[in-house]
Image (cartoon, rainbow, N blue to C red; front, side, top):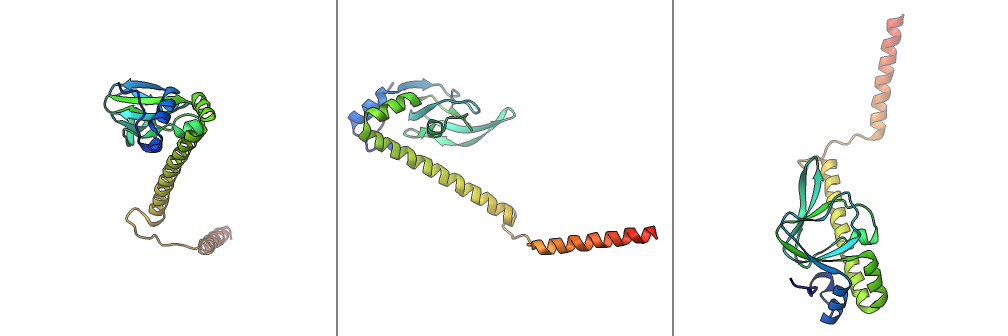
Length: 185
């Protein structure tokens, strides 16, 4: 088992010594294929770095799941829960035997307070990761909004102005009132 953090991803620019110090604040562990790292709906309070193997993010529902995407060596996960503790919105499962490193929020804060300069590199990397993920989600949401607006085939649905809808509704209501009052006579 490799007990060192790789010079990849958000800590690619940290010297070996600084990566070794960061590694000492967390723990290395192994998961077999199918092993769960993060469980949807449960808090985990940790930041993870994939050392080897592969994971996948899954959204679970009704005994089934959708794969949201693969997670490879050098990738970091759990950063949202480190900054905004809550329950996980998806599960993370090993798709093959995998090694990872994890650090709790408390240990991360201890590291940040003790090693200011390398901590800045780590925090900027985490902020960049969060920014990229937010941008990706925003892009997907914008695409879904466009599809809904213009229909699944990309053709624009006819747009009816609010005033037109109100006018049509007013005419229909007046017609129904007139028809109803003529029945009473």
